[in-house]
Image 1 (cartoon, rainbow, N blue to C red):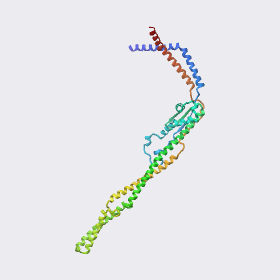
Image 2: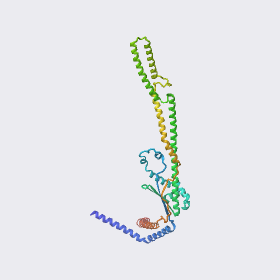
Image 3: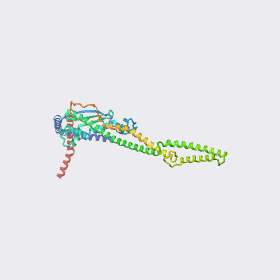
Image 4: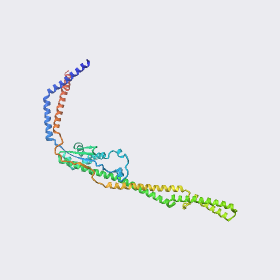
Length: 392
């Protein structure tokens, strides 16, 4: 019961409010109507006789996917496997290229060139270049990307249809030239980096080769082979020594210790022992028949050989990348693919005159009604209250 009563009160208040607004409108309908019509006439004059219509010319370009290769691209072009997952981390090449195109087209450099070439400062009465660039970027051009298709649409509004077409063509020309310049600059930076690494590897290879040469001059051409030969000789010498010892034992059993044959055999064994000792403990680095420090010599030799092989492999690895980088630096091929060339617009694109007039009249009608409502309900009462206070 209470809810029904509250609902009836709310409906009565709403009806009372609407009635009040309607009464205010009927009281001032002449002013509202004539003012709205007057604004409509003014808007018609502005839209059809004062405001110059603008024409739209546009073009569609496609991402080529062949921007400056960089290190990753150079690796692929040189026949070297690329890093797996690298593209997923850095994003699609095509999307990055479209984003770059958009940045170039909206850049100060590009827009300033267009404004100067077609004297738009004078055409649109700009006072400062900064204002011209801002207005041209926000109101005279539009750039929209289609990431699925890998395309970008570029449009230009202008009061002259022929100039609109020419501006779009010139912007594509600027896009192409700036993009080529950036690619060449990027390729130059990459080439300089690779060239520095190439020179460093060559220098390291020379050092490794010189170290190996010095080592071989000191210890022989192939210490590992020599050591292997010496070990084999030592084993053979030890075997011969044992045989001679057995022979001496037999002679001692058959002859007296003073016999010449026994003495001769003992001298022979002593000489063999001395020779074997010299091989195992000799410090004479000029002698090839020595085993002392042989493991270190062989190990150092293998390390030096390994360093030379590593530097050779690095040099073989970087030479094709370096050559490709030099080629990329010299490339100045067009990089922008135009799918839809700009055409001469045949009809105006904006302003929408009927919509402009209707919007102006509607805004005037609404603002006048709000103004009279505020005046009748609030301002009039306020003025009356102020007057009563003053009269007292």
